[in-house]
Length: 94
Image (cartoon, rainbow, N blue to C red; front, side, top):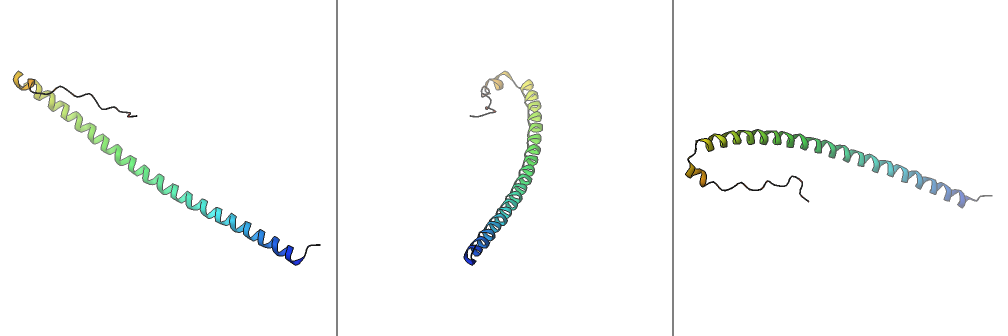
């Protein structure tokens, strides 16, 4: 037959187990909240970067047109002063 001490130990063990589950649930909720905020922030940043890329691509197009016009109207002496083009930057660096 279980004594008072045995019953008390079982009650304490059960309470600590329930407390651990509650703490685990709180931790999981906090992690989910952090994940949600992080994903929202990343999505916002991706949108900002996409807009910036679109602006830069448009600017590149404008500069290429301007460059072609200037080259077609430049004297051979002026064109001779232009340094050769550099190698393009690697799009996927190691």
